[in-house]
Length: 287
Image 1 (tube, helix red, strand yellow):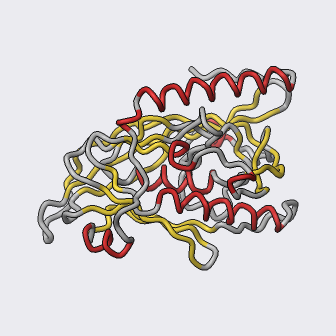
Image 2 (cartoon, one colour):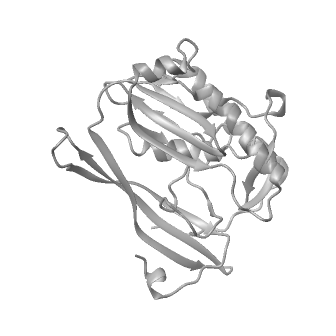
Image 3 (cartoon, helix red, strand yellow):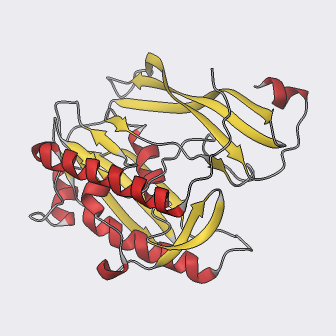
């Protein structure tokens, strides 16, 4: 049972010390399990990889620029710049059986010295300027794509705040993955018997991604939400909840119907709403 707990106020020093401690633990884990992590592509050209991996397991795109009146355009430009640096570390990566994709292990620390700029980052649900800001656009896309493949998400952190209403939303609430260097990571493991290649690029203001494979794709997935509801909590705040599920289909022959293999629970979400909901009896009780 979920219970809303108001965020405790901690001093800036305590926050910094806590971040340093968890970053240190994560670096130790990277060193200890170094052989498990997938490495960036340094040998094959993107065209060669497209030929080696001719089948698209799943593709997706999302806009990098959004109509946010209270956000400086320069911060959105910075986000695009930061994402473009990050995808260079990942584009063409081959995730072999048994290997783990680690978002931060591949990108590294997004500092100004390494070319990252100020972009939009959410702090306590409010947009602020921060070096490396905007990289959640990439982690969101990677998480959503992976849910539509046989690859396994072994570490993912949900967003703590629901910032925008559902206008023009095309994916279920809570279908993204937040990221904080380096202790809030997105990690994906290949527990199949075949290789998968990751393709990422930016075109016409949109971020595009593909997981590709060498064999014809017979698996398909439908990701959807269940048990969506909103609660009113102490202090006059609202919290939004849901669970994310996935249907797995297999189509072994071209002319055959898809066969439902499983309908599995993936995760649950609880996010503090940063806008005033229009509540009615149905939204309170859940869908």
